[in-house]
Length: 425
Image 1: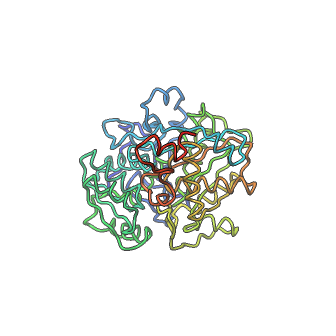
Image 2: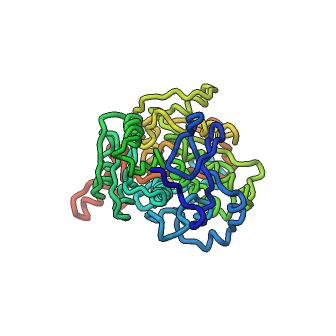
Image 3: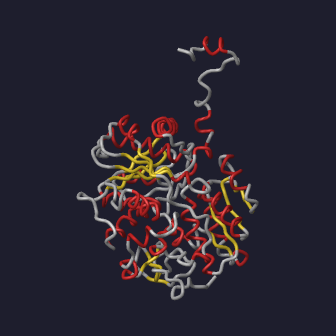
C-alpha cells in the first residue's frame, strides 16, 4: 500500500512521520519503522495548527474522542471515520480507596471499561482504522492479547469491512467469545503474543495482505496517537489541569508514553498549565511479564525480553516495543515502576471493586496493586493528586477472581431460614 494520508482536504494537523530514534522524516504512509535506523515512527504535527486549537473548540465537539480531532492525525471529517465513538469515559473519585492506602490527596480512577467494547483499545482502533480508510486499506487486522481483537472485530462489523485478527490460543475464553461474536476471521496461534506479533509482521509483507491494515503493525503510528485521548480527557475532566501523578499499566509501554506526550502537548499549546512541580508518571506491570520495570530496577536501558506467565494476559508482551521510551518518560518525570504477582493482582481487583465500585480486568488489578506498593515504598507521594488508569472490564477475566468471589450466604426461601442465617440481625 503506497497511498499517503490526505492532508490538504481533511484539515489534519499531521504533516509527517518522524523516527523516534534518528529523527528521519517520511510521508504520512503505512509505515511503522525507520528505513535508516529501524527505530519506531510517530506522527509529527504542524505546531501552528495545534496552537490554534482552543478549549471552547474542544468542548463544543462530540461527547467522544473526536472532540480532540484537531489534535489527532485523522478523523477531522466525520463522514470519513471508522469508529465506535469511544471516549469521555468516567473519571471516578476514589476516596475510600485512597483512605485505605493512606492517600490524603484526591485519588481518581479513569475507568475505560465504559468504552463500547469495554477497553481503552476502542480509542486507538478508531484512530488507526480511520487513518487506514484514508490510506485505502480494505481489510482490518491485528495481533492481540484480547482487547484489541475485540475492538478490531467490532469496528470491522460496524463499518462493513472484513477483519482478521490473530490471538494466542490460550487466551481467556471471555475475550475469545467477545471477538468471535462479531463474525470476522479469528485465528488462534499456538504460541505467545510475541509469536503472534512476529507472524503478523511477516504477513504484512506478503502480497496476499497488501490490502490489510494491521492496526499495531503497518499503521501503528496512527494507532498509538489514539492513546493520547486518555491524557486529554483526564485534563479536561479535571477542569483543564494535569494531575500531579498518574499510574498506568504497561504492556508495550506505549500507553504510558502517549499519556505523557498528551500532557506535554496540552502545556505546549497553552490549553493547560503544568503543575507547579510538574507531573510524575508511574508504570505498572505483572510479575509474570515485567521486562520494563525490571530494567528500571536494575538501573539499565537494556530491556531483556521475557516469556510471559501469569493471569494478566492483556499485559503479556515479553518484548515491549516502546519499553525504552516508557523508561525515559518515567525517569524524566521522577516517577517509578513496579510489578505485582497473581495474588496481588486478584487482591487489587477486589480492592478496587470494594472501595470504588469499579470491576477491573486483570490489568486494572495490576495497577491498583502497584499503586499500593508505590505508596508503601514512599515512591508515590500520598499528598499529591493522583489518577490511576483502569483499561478494561472485569467481566472479560472472570476466572481471575471466580474462586474467591461468590455468595456470602445460602438459604432456603423462608423467613426462618433468613433469620437462622443471621440476615435479620
